[in-house]
Length: 232
Length: 232
DNA sequence: CGGCAGTTTGATGTTACTCAATTTAAGTGG
DNA sequence: CCACTTAAATTGAGTAACATCAAACTGCCG
Image (tube, chains in turn cyan, purple, yellow, blue):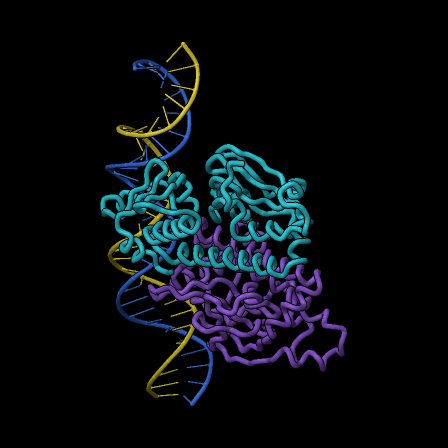
């Protein structure tokens, strides 16, 4: 469709390419299916079994768990091409929600077919492994910074991390990034309150480091931002 | 050796069983190797390339990252049978430390052989996937509780989580668990200071919930402990 | 006995939370 | 285009949780 070529990116792309030596696009359509969601709509929830492997194909989404205290923890943000999670390849049940942040398109891949392709082609297995490794490293990094860092460090880290991921997908001009996050999302991702996130963002703005508004992140002082983030 | 049968547990056991239809134990010895470490010794560090897949075979260890602030974040604790991390199966380089908490034995598996066995037997792939899924879920859970929970909730969660894992490996009597953690380790795992961990532990003790001393965790009021932990 | 690592306790400081109100931005229907 | 509604961002004041600093205490080992 209007989907960019990088549609399935990391794991996804590599899952798609080595189809059984049949026809190119026509044959693919019967094991993959497209779905569209509006902002705020839930793509998967922990109680439902999910028969297919889900890949975000355009837009932004986020994966989170709901705590019984009423709070939620955003585990990560999903960008175009991201697998919802690597577990999804092998597990029917997931223990998290995925919600659309913007308008999104998601691709549903038939699980059995995905597994077959992985078993068939070792390079696919390697690709999946790389995907798992990245996912794990991301989780570790966020844990470390949330557990050990100050509010400024947490937010700086989150932004840098997202910036890198966006950069790997598209060309950035003038250090401007499309950033459809609300302050509440940032808060839920790094374990702060919205109010406090707001204060830190104000500080960053006044300090000439960056400005996030109207869904656009603009970085003025990248070195300073990097200095704040405690690892990487 | 003196290693219990559950040596390689989750992934490990399944990696070992389906050897190429050759002899049983004699043939295995040439692709796996045993190493012994004392408490505090480092098994792997981020800068070194690691030619083999490492499995903890006895004792306790922990995986952590060192932040430039001087703090460290313990990512998880390793029990007998645990793979150091699932990434290790495919990646030579790891971006974390693993350090012995007690006397430990570790098994080094030749990576190429491990990969071959996974590729050969689909059930091994499934086992590895299950291992990744568990690892990811664990990471997500810890992140959520560290980001969103109070000091008491964090510690309660960590303890419950470790208790479950110990239970899955051995029989527990009287709610007594071997727990070789120092308070510093708890602090570094859940993002608190030692002093504060100490206070919370005192509270738990005075509240008749549990007592951790001399390397033994004894739980008196399990329901209350569970009530504290915000998820699971 | 002295030294060391770990634990415990107290006093004080600071970060980040809570509650509450105001302002701005973004829609929506007329 | 303008009144009306709603969601998001911003600001202030008071508070609670946790950090920091410092010291004393414990058990252990040489």
